[in-house]
Structures are given as C-alpha cells and as structure tokens.
Length: 130
Image 1: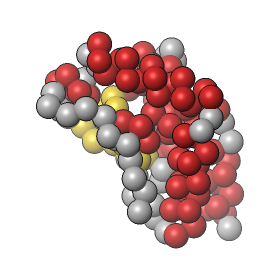
Image 2: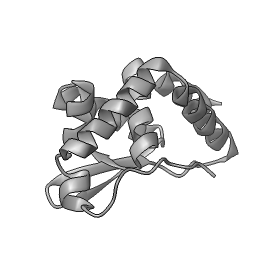
Image 3: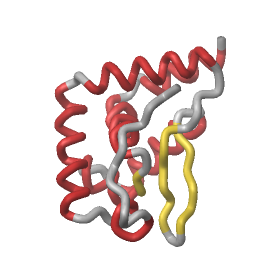
Image 4: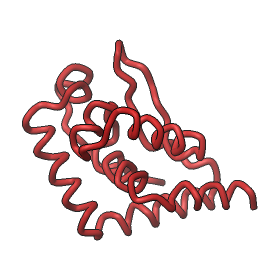
C-alpha cells in the first residue's frame, strides 16, 4: 500500500502532470526542452523529474551533456493501469493539449537537444503503455 500512496502523492501535482504529459506526447525530452516548453526553471524541472523518477514513473539516460527523460516501463499491473489512465485523462485536458501544441511548435522550431542533436531523423511519437 505504501508504494501506491507514494505514487498518488507524486501524481497530485500539476507541474508533474504537465511534465508527464509532454513525455507521453514526445517519448523523450531533455531538461532544456521541458524548461522551454513549460516556462519552468531548470531547478523546478529537475526537482519534479527526480520526484517522478523516485516514484518509478520516468527514467533518464545520459547522451553527451544532456539528460533525457522518458516514461518508465510500469513496475506492476497497478502502476500500468494508473499510468494508462493518467495518459488518457491528460489527452483530453485543455492545459495538457495546449502544452502538446507548444511541444509540436518547439519541435518544428528545433528543440535544444532531443530532436536536433540526439535524434535528428525522428519526430515525437506518442508513448503507448502496454
């Protein structure tokens, strides 16, 4: 039960939900892109991403000087169901849709790292939780 409470606490923050939404929409983003799209500081993004990572919702990888974040594979069936539900709910939420549009504009204009330097031949792809 403790893990479930921790997961719901993590999801009870608008900034973290907005960050998750962008990762659902893109597959993977760097801190710089997240900052730029949402207008958050680097400190705020890093703090919230660390919280999401501890809850097992996101994972990171290093590529050169960039740290890239993506949605983690669910640890169990409960987490899978919750993540899938959050993704579905965010997909129809007005603020999340505005953020997704800003993401697409950001990608078109040339993201900091993710799609320009790290994966120049890819565009964002929606994450599918199995």
